[in-house]
Length: 406
Image 1 (cartoon, rainbow, N blue to C red):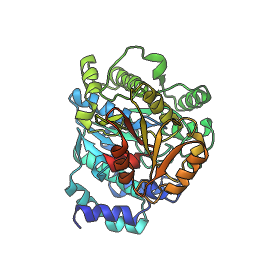
Image 2 (image 1 turned 90 degrees about the vertical axis):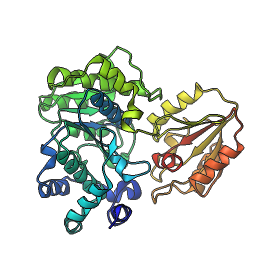
Image 3 (image 1 turned 60 degrees about the vertical axis):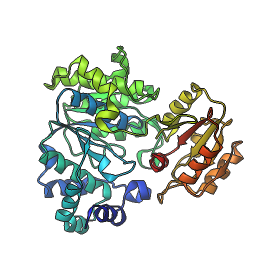
């Protein structure tokens, strides 16, 4: 198989959460542990930082990778999902994994994958860990895919465990309360491994403190400890929380883990995240006149920040290209979204995308206005056609909507 055939096989043959939802969510780590043993435990051969959270874990992971690159380290970065190409998930110093490695890894292990019915995510985690081991990275930033306790990445013993924040998302897997979600994400906390929490929440703070205490782990709440201001090239207002989280992680690395990152390297890393890592889709300006902004925020907490930032923008008319996945709780986000905008409803091109008529009808019944379109590109092109030079077009609602127009 060539690269495209290999990737197609990965997507089509194995259950994958972003396409299928609940059927791809595993209830234990047995398959991942089986794969790790099959690969001779690559996760034991490199240092790592484990990053979980409802929002901001992708931005935090990329920021941290950028900072460590500026400090001269060889940095692996594992994130999900990708926007355009599968290889975006696995990078070293901003460079994507080679097509040849992807092809070779699947070819070498395909019989094992089929025999043990591994999920897309389990297989991809194994690929990342194998790649980081063979490339001898100094450290790898590993982003949790979903939850924490049962996530396939949760076989590592990291230098630091990170939980950015807690919000309502994936409640069908993680539970219906802040405490239940926090308990799942606290599952990445390991014995005597320091823990950095990005945002303090009264409802979850005790969960994290108790779990850290049970594991004899030092715990740091970044928003309570970091007062110094740092700029980043990631311009979303919500990035201020992620910046503080990264600064606290660096402080722990310097003080306890033998890393050396100067203040200047920290500043440069935060200012050059896109350049150093290739991150896209975070309050990204795609063009001017009309101004087009896309953002991957997709749940109540993330969209709240994005919509607050929209209020600071100057424009004559607002056009919203909007689509979601079919398990999205629309009632939790409708009150956040601007009713004065014109909406261009669409369905992202994945099986889990919400039917556009269902989405449109829900919005129209709640006082919004707009039309439905068969594809994301049709919705986007219609918005561009109707928007005047001093209007603003916002594209979002789902990572998968943003992926189709970047």
